[in-house]
Image 1 (spheres, rainbow over the protein chains, first blue to last red):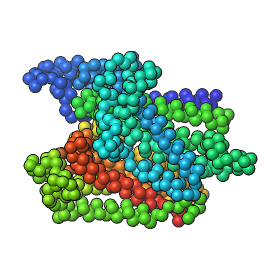
Image 2 (tube, each protein chain N blue to C red):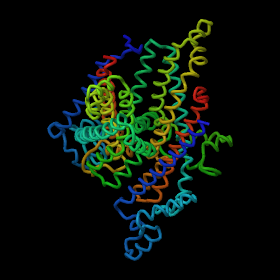
Image 3 (cartoon, each protein chain N blue to C red):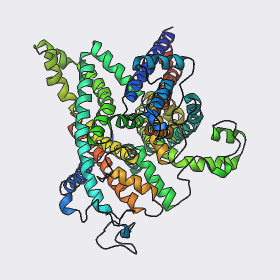
Image 4 (cartoon, chains in turn blue, yellow):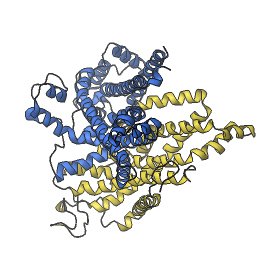
Length: 336
Length: 283
């Protein structure tokens, strides 16, 4: 019962947050100097032409009226028409979303594997130089943001030892018949391994750049909670039973140490998704973030609005899922 | 060496010295840029485009770290770029800290409706992708130094507000705060005299971190061509140009990147080092 109430309360605050985001974006982007309508017409256009088009996009009404019209549309799944690309915002944005989702999820998986391995390594060799090395490398990896890691990777694997592609999502020659925009997922399901390899070769560097800071956080936090768990009585009991150190860390300590890390990974995953904006730009990866920057440069107000709302929705969804996962995994919370 | 928490204590001294040393060096370079820069950072010479650094075949004497595609001296541009980077770090970092820490302190110590309002705004802010928000704000405010500083403050205040709120909240629940109240201090006086000194180490650590972040934000904005006018040399602008010509002239990307890398690393290590040093529990 309390869990259900908590969940409903969360849904309400989520709705309030999304509404707040919509209001702020709406106000902010309508103060943008530069008339998007004037930009899309040829230089010889008359004032009457501009006025007519403005009316067509609803820019002649007050901000409040525009917001109500927009909100009414959103309720029916209509996010308006992109000015620069002249297509419905919803189909443009949904077309790009899979690329960003695939990148984020691959990055998350890399981060979990890397961070988890580092934490286990540091715990297994605690008190030795290896632990010190893990601490220092995690500390350094954490202080450098994804943008700089991306540039470092471009130099390493794009120039010095050019094994990966530094731009794009897929080689044009392979970009043929996809039924969905989840290229990687689809290629794996259809067992097209040459396409999978090509996609990975494009995705590797941007995903790794996004993953490194998160991996460092996971390594630090998981190692810390493993350390605390290793002193608990039940772990000592397992040790006196004669289990070896590997078994004790992975079977006994890890399941209990993972919970605090999980909540943090949730919040950090939203930061990672936010990071895709500049990383996609850096690697010319055709995702949502890259489209967002173009939309700002082109003053494409409806498109900017749609993308920001989608990002906000994604962030709040991730947080919601993590909270529910936490409640399911943590027995203490379930019976509270 | 192990401290009270059983953690291996890292040598704090070396970290502080190295990061402090690099930042001092950078500050000196920024201040003395007109005196020590070998060339005019804006001077173009199309006959000297993409000259490699001094140790390589075909280097042009006088251009230690080579030239970019327009024949501008990379070293001089890095030195001049340090000016903008450090101004953004200091001014934007400090303003963000003051704004965010104040809101966090009020929110965490006073609780009640100020807390509800501030926390609601923090929630909304957390739902924005920060880079996109920054780009959007610069599009609204127009490019320029002031716009960058304003944008950083608007975006990043939550970083302070969230952490300081939590700290102020836990400090506020402690006995010494209650006794200060009993002793006749006002609520506001307690906040300034009792809570603030106790959260100061965290504020200092966050502040230096924020300075590093501010430098990055400026670089990212220059990278998407939204920072300052293209006349003034910026590290981000250099990186952006270097990215496009990385296969022909890697040095245009590498040297500003190394500078940026070390600067951001130094800011964060300085913050960590200072935090350890001022932490009353560890001391």
